[in-house]
Amino acid sequence: MTAVLADPADLGSVLSGWSAGHPDARAVADVVSALAGAGADLAEIVAAGPLTDLAPTGGTSNASGDEQKPLDLLAEAHLVAALRGLDVAAVCSEESEEPIPLTPSGSLVVTLDPVDGSSNLDINAPIGTIFSVLPTAGSAGILAAVLQPGRNQLAAGVIVYGPSTVLLLTLGEGTDVFVLNPSTRSFVRTRAGVQVPADSREYAINASNARHWDAGIRSYVADLVDGSVGPRGRDFNMRWLGALVAETYRILLRGGIFLYPRDDRPDFSHGRIRLVYEANPVAFLCEQAGGLASDGVDPILDKRPTSLHQRTPFVFGSRTKVERVRRYVTDPSRTHEDSPLFSRRGLFRTREGA
Image 1 (cartoon, rainbow, N blue to C red):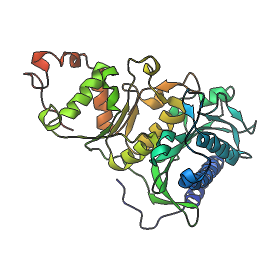
Image 2: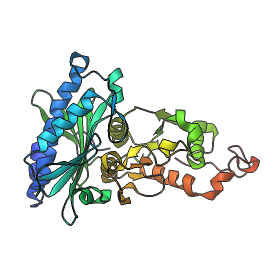
Image 3: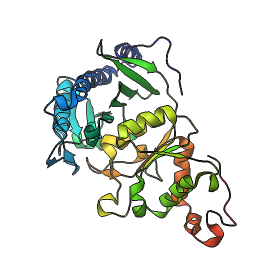
Image 4: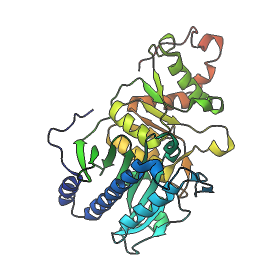
């Protein structure tokens, strides 16, 4: 993990320096700057919490079928307003069924999860905003521009509203961490070129769903739970923060792995994380920091979305750990683990490294 910078730079300076070396990138820098400014506004609103009329109650559902809270709608409107007048053809948001048109001739499209983890509002736990920037060039319309593989992203970011407001940003040349200075309302870079630690004993998964998982995921997590007395020969700690944005920040700084696999429930057979709004931008941030992201088997960034609100299984974190999950999911021999010879204490199981 890169150390805190001795001479931190503000986001504006970083974007100016970057776009100076990329003549066609000024529009991307303008979009990132606008979203960061809107994020600073939202940080104040979130901090006010119950003192506002944005109590975490709902009654409506968004395009993905999740309950909408007042803050979800306010955040979407605020972020979209910040992008008006820029070189953005449309915004595609988790909260809206269809793309929101802006500048017809725009060269970019922006995807948004305005408030990730909004159920955490009830308990004052971290929530955040996820965004991605894609080019429209060569696409036959807005929908085609959005339904590109994640590797075509020009920029992606996560804003975490927690004890401090943090911006995780990639412009395709590594992943940096910025922290909001409340007194100046500017984001200051505190870590440049973050690298996901290769080794960590932390994993994140919602274990209450264990009975629904496929055999490979059950075996992988069971070996972690068995710890030092199991085939891995070491103990692990489970984390579950209830917000993808918070998990992303944790993994970028501390390593480990996050899993939200498909399972046998009807609404979860294709996973639950949104490919366009959540998985792609987080995968871009993770891979730019030396990590890996997959659907359990194939790289997330190689998947071509087929619909705006498509869901996917999602596994990301330290490269070796994501690769290990793939082996558990795809190796047919893992199906024999419950037999006496291949059980966790069986004759033919060997201890594995981290």
